[in-house]
Length: 527
Image 1 (tube, one colour):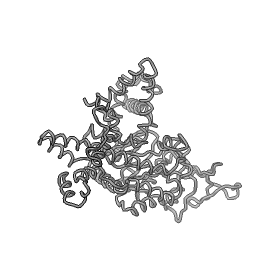
Image 2 (cartoon, one colour):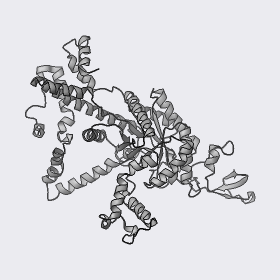
Image 3 (cartoon, one colour):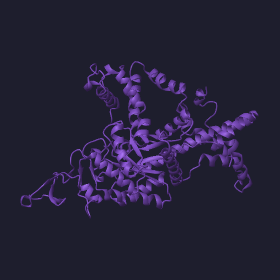
Image 4 (cartoon, one colour):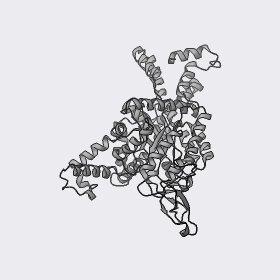
């Protein structure tokens, strides 16, 4: 229904008794489109499903997101996206377990090892959607005020323009891909936490194949994976959580850390040669052994009729054969898609299209529509990696690279060179190129605002506490907010002061004591 149809329907109902204004009710309902997290999860899951189908038809229609650690950060991202691009289409949010551990735990900053409170994950999802819904209320509230002014001025053309903007309003609420780490326990624990995350609004849950109580950041050493059956139990647990709550379109992102994980905590159970357990165990690093030479505590398995001794560490972990990571990743991904996953995540040690694409081509031999979520991680030195890739490509093509020292390519001395320019161009087109050539449906940066917060705070501290004094804030922050039309320059409005004034007028009429009068200093930013 249009805005005026909604107002008319309310006026015709019995909801306006007691001096309740039908137009006020209509405005409040439009400002609060989503009443529950489950409504959000169902709405955003459908968006992701449609985007996945569009990508299958055209890989240029990949999707993107940025990681966030606070509702305000997520809100400002979506406000900025609407401001600069006019639409939130194919733009999501990522909720990073790393940032929750580092920034949201009551224990203080923690490494990415699932030591933070697992309840902080659904709490952050709920917080993010609270801020996004407030962004809706704020923007619509400003449209309603503009509508009232157009009426007061008798400007019917402006009134119709604003009505069209209200009727076609696009919400700031977008899909969140939410990190559940390795499930924070067994399959039952995974199911219980997944339910809380979905009830808070998550439509997509990402889970990794590491051992829950040995979990490490994907870009650090010491990662330990689990046999496929253990992981698939957790995939099923998440699917059951989605279906129990009526989110049939819910999305599971299965992440494999096998590329950088050289250890497993247990030997897989195998029923017959060639089954999934047997394929997992085939990657174990073993030596042939004479039964007569078996030592105390040795663990033996049978492989192709021969007795083999596994390489077991003092930590009681088992070692995989070297250089098997890519093969294990391919097997992990195929098995995950065959056991309920919708999207894949391959954690890599560098951003290299050839490496990722090579694995995806093998996966697609078994599952033709396989699609990836890819971590464009700040853990990579993007500048160095791509300069080295260009250097190696040039050297292979016979180009003269004598003017470059491959071990020093990060140096500022190379910033203005042709090699640096080509590397930057490859970085610029990396997402589009890998979406086309490596099956990447969704590109995200896990920790961007962790780094932007640190960088901007460092710059402000240097200026403000230095010779610039107050000018360090005014010139580099406030003046730029004004010049770039950053909504937060009117911080009272952003925090909801004008929404509160509207409510005061609804509730008290002429007796309303409003904050937005002529003495409000926010009026200084009207121009």
